Length: 607
Image (tube, rainbow, N blue to C red; front, side, top):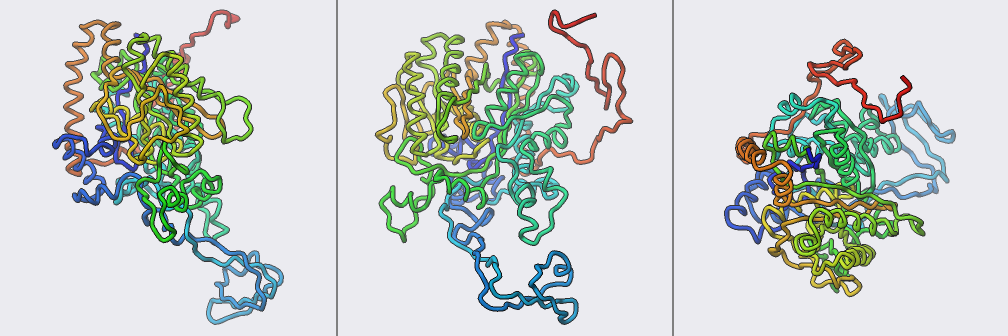
């Protein structure tokens, strides 16, 4: 066994659609697809959005003006702080008066079960109102798609609803029943690393818990536990996979997905796991969250977008072009996404005929070193990019490195990112003798989904290998003058390009969370597996893969017909203490066993 991590499935949901069968990627390049592929993409969107109208499918996907499913940017609730200048009367239920009433407030019995309250002068009050928000664009899930309506979501935060869909989408993309994998692989050989960089901040999660009492609402028993940042992985383990394997996902700001990918890759390379489920989910399109990023000056505001395009104050900015990586820009565009991928070790992938979508030889993570600003860049991303490219160079050789790959850039759309990331990519390209290195920046289509962003990039890369089309940065008219690009090639329109060998997925996060993943293309992966395992093993894989591909196609047909729902198992097969037995050789439960055999490093034993 090479212990080479093979990417065998990818699922998820973002503003471009679902990730399985590379549908979200195809929405980005739909104008360049053939008639049959375009029709399949439209059918997938119709199934998600509940509409066959191509105009609605276009306007209701990708970055666009905020819709009512999130909040109205023209009327965001907020409270003005005022001081009463005269006695004010109010009417409240008795139950609200009995506890915590300020001393100077005078209750009097009113009619029925009501109580009249007199509030004295010079009392500080919060007066509810609404204001126009500074930012009106976001990368929202396709219009009409509600992940919570597809299963018994029971007041789950939106990020967890999206996670259930994403994991189920990945299993559908795999084409191999999970139950078959459970029979083939021991529970302790399965790893799940899925998380959210910011946690679940809507009303059903931490957000509702923190502001509930202040808004006169009751805090529920679910809001606290469901708000944790690692809860997406916990949900998958408990309710989708029913897994008792390795866990412990990472949080790394905007690099969270790659942090989790690194853990999965490490587990497979070390032999700790044979299957790794990794990903990230983020649902930050909330007024309160966006307010924080806007206060930092990180988001592209309506005012700044109008200034870029020379529009007057009464003209609406082009929300479709809100995110402008590597061009004249003013900030990033908030987005929501959940992305989950499945990794097998190479022997398991060949044995079961799994799809060979890519190989992930390694993922590199580094901090920035000393910093002036916690949000400012440093040395870390130079290191991660250089190490990723050095790994690919060692595998492929200099000739193939120079001509057969590309970079999926972090490409946020901020003035700082366009300068710093282009410097990093250009200097790494120069160091390794790469000229005209293709660079894509798909946030121009999807927006920036924070912890899930590199998942968006990775799944888009799988689409590039499927079609040979690199998505262009269509939201800009030209590359900005301060972008360093003597060794880089930025396409402003989607175009065919020979990137048949490799890709680097790059991510930069607040706080110095830098990560770069080295990926081998399907063709290179097959070449490497053939070289190591031989033609007989590849022939066996091909025969098995025919059955897997048939299952994938059947599932896809069922989905397009509306006959599919996410995998979700609540209160099914629950394991209690009575179901577990322990002896000196293993822990046994639910018909499965985890070995207690210990392989100590030399010198560790005193016996």
